[in-house]
Image (cartoon, rainbow over all chains, first blue to last red; front, side):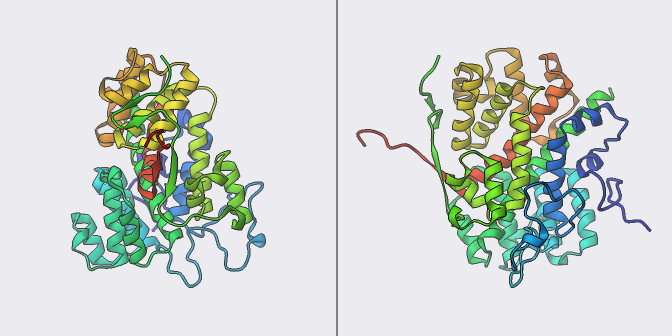
Length: 207
Length: 198
């Protein structure tokens, strides 16, 4: 059976925002959106970096890029697991994404990331805590600190402080992984709003 | 109206920003990191913000591609109105640094800053005309309650004179500042210019 997301698009292909919003190529809003091609491409490329690490597709390498053969030993594409460094495993990124979607009240994105988690496989205790919004009750691990950081960044960004970053460091995260986590949650807050706004534009256009 | 605006802790003065954790030394950056810094912002190599984010160059590259396309692409929503939305979102999220930068850009493009003073003092009633008011209201609602956005909000923008293309540009501008504000607020802090006499 072909893998599908609950949004209806085959997993691993196509534009994720179009799939989540249910934008068909025949929809006038699809043409409006894709007229801003650079935005569409960078939004999808960001998603791919966070959730399809290592999935290098034709067109990923652009003029001026460092090509795979040029890369020094030990230096790998961000998003991949580095040698000697656990990085941020895909299942943990997806747990962060589900957490951010639930905290933001985005049913569409929560469905998307829940389906992806079912494929990637997550720790059942962590998944249950995220679903219930009880990540503070998890054992004191790096994942717990990541989920608490996600809550603050999504709901109370103005309360960000140096101590929060120190807690991530103390939990064993290297600075590049903290950058990945912060960019991931910030991207999700963008994606949630983009999807909600496009859904409203679609509903308005069909009235 | 022109000059310095300082209201409710927000300012249109030029601020600096410092990262809370270690940044990449530009002298030690990889060729990939240098290329991403150069495409991100003219001053990225002396900016703590970009030197911190370039720990993950590919993620920063795509963020910068999206940001620059949303804020600077020709056509569609006038750039001053994109900056208005960015300033409103930054004011609602409490990002003093982002608000200062985009207040300045609005003033450069619109050749006035009356709306900036309104956004700083009361963003919910800001706007010198119906169109600006509609842009500010939509930006606030998308920031605070994105999943409550519906067809009525689109109609309000349409009634204020925005085309479908312009509404999409507005949605992009307001959404990308959900992203930008969160990084600025949680990875470091603004540095204010020294006040004479203090």
